[in-house]
Image (cartoon, rainbow, N blue to C red; front, side, top):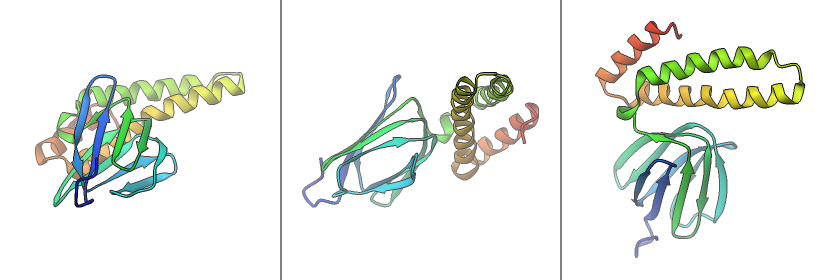
Length: 164
């Protein structure tokens, strides 16, 4: 709920595996299928589809960044609920897993392009593209907001896996 002064709104970010975040915030910017959208207390109610990307939460002067995957967000007068397949802070991203997923997605994309049926091919490519978006979001958040050690380890892992 919004606080008495009306300058906060309650945010819940949930995944199938955890309640990732819950608390009163000043604002949030989330990646949607229509582009990044910012929400503050008093925003009109709406539901938006999420795409993998970086979310930015502001609590007074404190700013937090984390990735979200595909899902949706429901905005009401007193709360924002984000439901997504995964959410991660830069320090929690497993670099080896991230790079392996990218390599697997690259192989899956090559196979998807070989599917003869055009509708099946289009669907397969769209599913694989989601993994590329997740990779890009994870890489971006580490490059922008990760600590120096995480950035160094990212560069090494990308080299090890031959990812540019």
